[in-house]
Image (cartoon, rainbow, N blue to C red; front, side):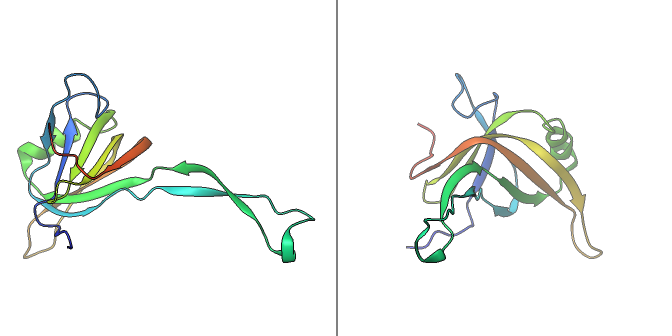
Length: 142
């Protein structure tokens, strides 16, 4: 069964890591769109004079855990609180409506507001992930 985007929650921890002692999570309000983490491995070229069929060979190298970006409806009180998170290490949780999702550590890398005439202002936040994110079947609070 497909999982709808509607009902997805992204929240930040009260401490620097998602699994830190006493961590409580505060959701970002009024989510409009989200791009979850997309880790990507580097390629190490191990091609050599004995490579079969003159084909390049590769092994996985280090990986970049990537970023997550999301957009929320602008709210002046929330905007001030969000800006206070800029460059501050935190734990984060993305919870899909089916209870699955992501847990990761990172920091707010960028935050900006934009809007079009005849529409409402939105705030877009980019989080740079630090370390290996956890993709889990159940991220619901215990």
